[in-house]
Image (tube, each protein chain N blue to C red):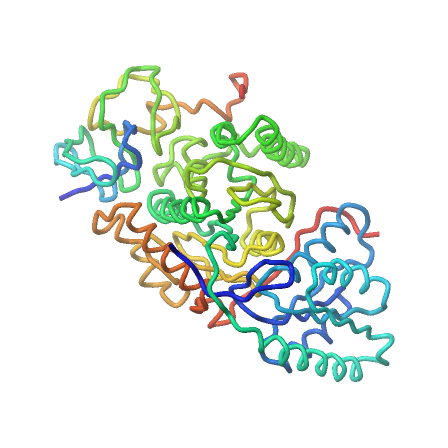
Length: 97
Length: 384
């Protein structure tokens, strides 16, 4: 069975540790359990949502904020640069601490 | 209670190895030091880099880092080999104040290369015999200082080996030991998250200043690191944001509070998790960690990095199944179970912790056995 690892119990994304296929169930390992179904093919090492994430909501990995959703994200969606923006290291927003 | 078997030093620190350092005070003394280290077993060579012509802060860092390497608890005694007595004295005084045995030799005084090699060989041979009489005994983990570092990182690093190293870091700190994470540039983008772990506002400010100072220095060279981070390679591999990339590297430090911020090669003054501002490349970084006093560094690698250090024992850890097979000669411990067999990170980290204690008690690692070891003190200025 295809697998995705969850690194912290608060996370809303998992990382594929096998190449993911659309509509094929993925087993969650690490700090979560259960299964999800991918909405698309997702490469090894990329992330999928394990919870629905509203536009503007935080993306959590390692239990920490790695970015913000720029579009609504469904369970099983590929989570990457097309629907996530960094909050740091950008020239167009003021850097805060 | 966990313990390890080590060698007690005059300053109360405990070595996990028991070797004599042949320290070359400056680059022009390296050939004699190399010959002496080659002639006497139980020694490690610490070549000198420059020193002559170095000025100000850069010179201080070089001298202090070399003294730090000699003061590392793994070093039982030091033979300092220089050209002339004044500079050699600057190094040997920094070492002898700790009570560690130091012998000095100067090539000008010894009467040239051949005589210096003969004299140095006798000094080293005598010291090796003396330190071999030290009997190792049991010590608590509070006597351990462990560096955490990564090199040759890939997707598996942030998912398995770095978090497993983080478990080791937390256990060392919980037992009253000291852990140092370094590689300043790897914090870019997530320094605000790591800063939240600082014990107090002063430590937080020191940490943020160190990161900002490096970024400013790099920007002054016309390079914008944030703009190209994560790299196209990283993005193809699945890393989405700079925060995510930095968090993967920071996972090596576990979850303990940050209690101190150190300069290059600087020794911590108390136990707990420290950050050291030092360059990320493996040899420079391991040298800085060894100079701070780390007896062991736990080195996480994805695609494989073989290098060790003559003073600090390096433990190479991978979570990448391919690397564990194809790079096996240089890998000491694999945590591939996390990605291959659904092993919990906590359990893999626990196994790694037990292994690190075995190494602390004398089990040799690949870079020691194959002698793939290198030392290199970073430069921070111009020579005169």
